[in-house]
Image 1 (cartoon, helix red, strand yellow):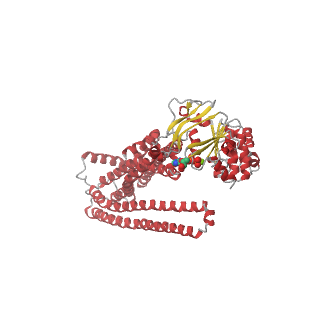
Image 2 (cartoon, rainbow, N blue to C red; image 1 turned 180 degrees about the vertical axis):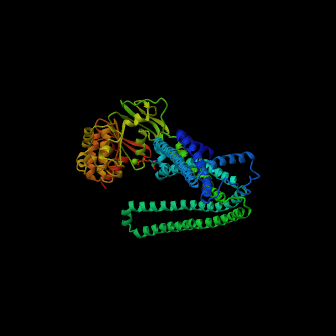
Image 3 (tube, rainbow, N blue to C red; image 1 turned 60 degrees about the vertical axis):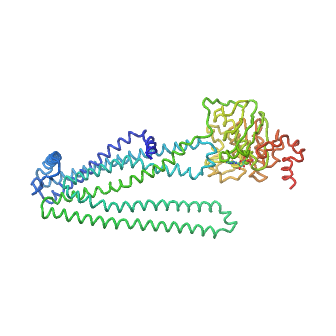
Length: 621
Ligand code: ADP
Ligand code: MG
């Protein structure tokens, strides 16, 4: 826990200036809090017309206090009294009012600066941690995202970062300010009457304990409530996004019942927490009053019978003691908060410590251009979770695969689903690295190139189009922000997208909504092709780019694809064999191995081959 804590503090370091301001202000805030309470005594004295300069009978020094404190107390109060109580009573009142005003004013000023500069530190740290997480998450390899649920990651960046904020305020505010305040107030109380103070601090913490307990219960229950709320939200989200399926299967009643179960649970939890929460104040109040009564009885006796205490002093003492309650309460929750933020911190650092599997070699060079060929040489690949099993029983996704694709060639990859087609093309862009063997670009291992330069040479159009909630224009120019508008239009025309874009309400400046909801599948696909055309990469990968489309938009998309294939090295994965008849070469991938190679005509001749079977399935069914 300490280590995590120290790591969180590392994020605090750049903010040391604001932090120091906050700390200094905290000290002054505590001092002025004490002074403003202390001033109540002379104020009351003036109001109740007691001359403070007259010795109260028996206000003898407390026997146990060391001499120097007594002396200090004497001299401070003497000079104070001689200043305030000199002259007319009304003047004295005026002066004391002014001082009270000044003390409270200063206290609040320091309080404000302290709170503001601490918030600056906290929010700054949170911003930095969030940015670090985001940056790091985007550095991680694709494989990481298949293990980690998006919701988890999102919660790391939002909730967990919020929680570590507490450790900052806990350590720099609560662990400093609250003890200081307690010290100051207790000091005041002791200087008035140490006996009474002792009695009070024996009784009052009892009441405090009870409140703290209740606080902990509430805290626990509220996290339950939050998870119930999350359940409800996800149920709602699921059924709303899947409303068509719900209706089609006539599951409205079932879903409604399921939802009602969740609202019932939520209802119960909220009632429970309300019960606990509302039990707190009456309980604490009763206990507090009990404690106060004991103190008042004892103090009252000293005032009325023993004459060892002034009424004003007694009230000052009560004030001071009461003021220690809040800081004590805060302190009691500090360890809880530190624990929580350590847990959140460790979840955050787990991610920050994760090393991307795909790393750039030191001294990697730029890939300038593709000159000759791309070669797979004895490539074996298995996904991480099955890697060990794959090595023992040969269930690898790609098995000792070799393949040469010349520059400008259009290679079609076909085969049954799960045959490893997507995996094969993912290796080219280094979304994954081969377990054995290598991929060579013009004879150089692709791992010797910088990842950025490698990926900049590759365009990918896949079945899932990814569009961002932005304008059409910015979606096409994704990653190429400075492209001139003419180029964007030219790319759209080549992608057969221009027509429908200008028919949109605001043409190229139309916002296309999250995930491109406003557009049809074919339109989305043509936008992503326009994006690829604008990027103009020498290597193009089409992964079932037309599979999700109806035949009419498929024809349009097919035309766009043909434009994009010109003068490029292409890998085309296609479900429908009609789309790849014109490929220079076709490979059939089955079970991670190339089982057939040739042109469409060649492959059809092999009557017992996989290709012939696939062909039969599609055209003679
Ligand atoms: P295709 O594109 O030919 O349909 P894939 O290359 O997507 O096939 O998948 C090949 C095999 O690898 C399948 O058995 C699939 O279950 C497995 N696979 C694909 N992606 C992953 C992944 N991210 N993690 C683990 N296994 C995967
Ligand atoms: Mg696939």
